[in-house]
Amino acid sequence: MNSAIILASGSGERFMGKTPKQFTKLAGLPILVHTLKVFQENKNIHEIIVVTNEDFIHFVWQFVRTYSLSKISKVVAGGETRQESSKIGLDCCDKKTKYVLIHDGVRPFISNETINELIASVETHKAVDTVIPSADTIVQINKNNFIDTIPDRSFLRRGQTPQAFEYQLIKKAHQAALNGNIKNSTDDCALVMQMSHPVFTVMGDKQNMKITYPIDLHIADKLFQLRCQSTEKSINMNLPELFSDKIIIIAGGTSGIGKALSILLKPHVKKLYALGRKTSPEIDITNYDTITNTLKTIWDNEKKIDYVINCAGDLIRKDVEFTSVEEWDHIYDVNLKGNFLLVKALLPYFKKQNYGNIMFVGSSSYTRGRAGYSAYCGSKAALVNFCQAFAEEVSSDNIRVNVASPGRVNTPLRYRNFGKEDPETLLNAEYVAKKIVFAMLQETTGSVFEIV
Image (cartoon, rainbow, N blue to C red; front, side, top):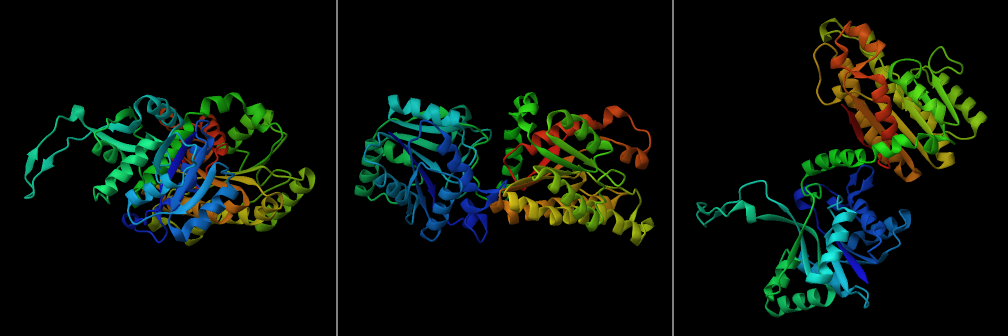
């Protein structure tokens, strides 16, 4: 029997948040849940023990119920040190445990491949660590802060988790450490080595990062996007199967990206509504009455709504000095307030059916304002924050909310503001549409999918 101990009892002092980092949201789910789901889905793991803060035990049991984490057998309070928490986890393993993996709860990018390789190796070597090469030169200093030695980098590795052990061996190592008055070791492999037992290594993954500081959360968001891209090819091949029973609404679906999405999806869906101000039914993203009336008509006809994509947007290319108050308000009404009005009207239907998927279309301009269209840039930056906040509000209702932010796209809107441009320097709308469809199918919520 193979058991996994997930250490999630850190206080997160370096993370500088009110909530311990393992419970912070990442792509719509607590970081710890992302970690647990990998071990839950791995066929070689039979039992999961979670060691956490005593005050958060009930949260973890809620995760078990909400996300069907059936392999979790115990959730227990950790100790004052990592070493103590690790030993508590070991003491709580099933008596049939033969091998055990010990993993940091704030490493959500652990892969099934690494877990499987560890299990295969531990059967032979009894103690195995996960490591990656060091890209930096490591220097050893003396007590006066002078360099003492510079080890050969080719023999240096950065330790990760999981670490895998024969169960009885690591139990014996922990007891030996206590007998030797070692109480604050930060590494289980170090305890095994204290008994002169060799530790084998397997190659880990650079993406298997430990989320320690606030900036790590931003890096992790990008890693989620990269991880999702590996499945894009298979998704594109299965569009008919994925959408055959779906009802999809595209606001702003008669031009540019919205039109390209409509052409791409229409042959594969049960019913697609590509809407604009001149369609029937119509939608004016700045008019709450037309939005509510149209959604009611579609709901009455279809009895469900699966996906809503808002491609409606506008851009006025003027410096602040020459932008009128009316023009500024118009841009914010279309690009920001319109999204609020749409989800405000849509939410009762999604709650009634207990699921839904919303995709906003933003812009790469959200990362840095650009001279000449500050209203547009500001509205798109605000849209990202609105998406992330709203996603957290409705995550418990099984509603996913994301934003796709493409770079410069060859659309009529862009042509009206920038004139003739070299098409080689622009993304085409069909390419962007495919990327948006791919993003719609991801399980993440509150994420920004950058399209370049």
